[in-house]
Image: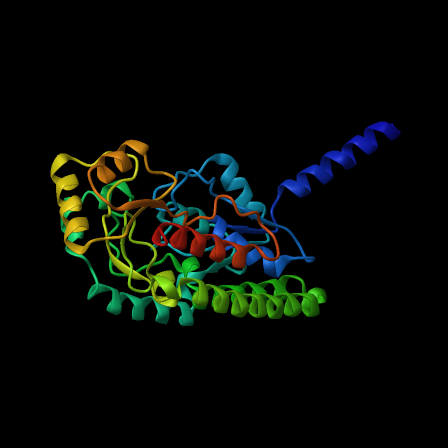
Length: 313
């Protein structure tokens, strides 16, 4: 009987550990959350690294995670359409929808106005395929950039919102949560200063990215993006698209062409062949960064290193 009770308690403990107290959709939001939950509760991430927040399909185990979490942090239907119906079924106090936060909404709208003037004509060469390849066919405004975890400013707002909600859930931990938020802001300010110095040398070095996601990071640190080619990373572009991209690279004397971990080597080989352009890799989801108190500054640093490594060649 005693053994059975011990076993039952052990199983109960394992179940409790498997349930995230704070569950974020994508890993970089988990970086921010884990700074605020440090010493208070646990943060977990819903999407596996191989998945795109644009077109993920929920599994039954994902629905269980959503239902058992104390707080679910997502950007909203503009980015994560797949989650809309499941989130609607959760109690409102359990959900933090970042696209509804006024400060974040204002930042995204402002970026959208600036961004529309900056589009490189290379966008015309994707034959509008990216609407379908990214699951973006629900008609939202393509000028709005919801990759807010790449904005140090937006991430500060995200941290603040998580701290507010966490204080409501754990009022007895109010002082610890406030300290965690203060520590996060200090670390973020320090890291911003370091990255500004690191990337200052590359302000005049033009480059292309494939995914139109990095606007906030580029703006924050004065990088010189020449545009992006929004093609499906898993499908090799056709000859017409390849030719157009190569012409744009040559025309602007681009220093680098940045892919992402999801891109097939075939795509990169065919694009870099016969050009003097360096090929770099950006990881907008922080695959190699571990969740933890200092994860978000580490994520920004990893991104800065990925830019400078290629642009310095």
